[in-house]
Image (cartoon, rainbow over all chains, first blue to last red; front, side, top):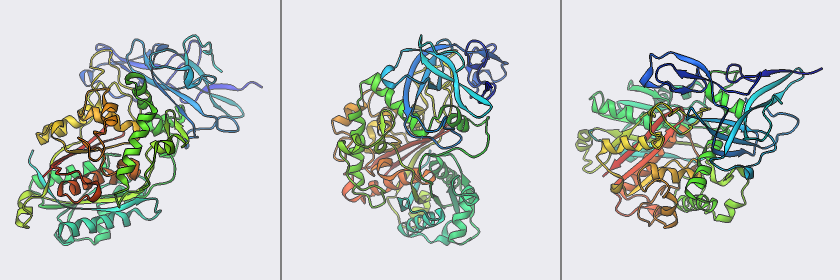
Length: 149
Length: 395
């Protein structure tokens, strides 16, 4: 039986349709926030309404690294054994803010360079018997892995 | 800002001793009191830097240490500001002294640490950025350090050899420090052969977690004079600033940086602001420094600090390093103590330990790691979630 796909943490990204991060935008000032509820406020617009907005799908690679050893909980090792992974920090095109995320499998640091175009993907973070738990990840633009895993 | 005097400094050696953190703090406090020739019963105020890894006694560190030394009815305050806790505790003591609430205070911090990566608090914590970054991204502290390191390589042409050279330099300094945890002199091959942890950073380039304790006895200048201390080391500036929005650098433990779409200068960052405030308070400029103690959470991170404290322009830090300017005997030695590379980090004690090193350097008591004729030193670090920490000492 197919597993049910759910967000690993709700409210941070879309799980249906085009992969997008869910952020906030100050209505009059135009500052962006991610995550909407947890980002630091803009002191210049404390009274501003913060609207929920979908953030840019693409941006430029700000920096990148790897996780060569399994982090402690609440990191969940997907599968039987820990596999090293790549982390990217991407500056969103319109919002001018940098968002962390893992990079989709199959991309190594040798494939990456600061400034290259990246796009958002939704992928499986880990699974249990009934569910695939989803998260956003980054992929080089045109990498072709943008649907739910 | 008026100065205060530092009368005494004391430390418990850094290591992985596995004992109660209170022991480390008490040993450091006793040493600082002896160094100051001040009796415990004379201390009017205890300013504790808290630990969040040692249970409830760590959250009320001032009373924990005071009780272990024997309650005397003195006033207490306990501060937590992550890695900035020590500087925050010192700033509280300074405020009490300058306000006339007390004449002499003890500042103390200590910690006993678990092995491996620091981890967030337990539970399902969807509103805690520290929890989210581990759960959703697997972004450990070294991952953030590595992002900054990689950016230096891509923007400024720094190399892995440069980063390794920082560790080599600091290990040479640490050899001469009896309080350091690692007193082995490493060479570039040792570092290149250590395991990759977060590309491009290898195990020997990433700050370990350590046990340790550090303490200071501080007083008003008048009280120091009354005690016959004519020329004490002085605290001339303390910075505990927050970032200023928008900060374009993604900082621990957040998932994202601020946005600078609406306003802001993406070239100004939190770490530039921290030193700025300390310089302003102390009426000192980068050219006045004789040495600096900076938070080398990674080898590459030390290079970031050269620029943030104004030793050189953005992107030029590796040039200073390659020229030997920041080694002992160079123009502006950085981390003569050996830094975190030689110590590992005992969170609430570390910023106090940086000040201990400044005390010994400015008194000319630093032995083989002495910076000759030093009269002005700066220490700097930051606590995650946005706590600045910088102290300028003069003599």
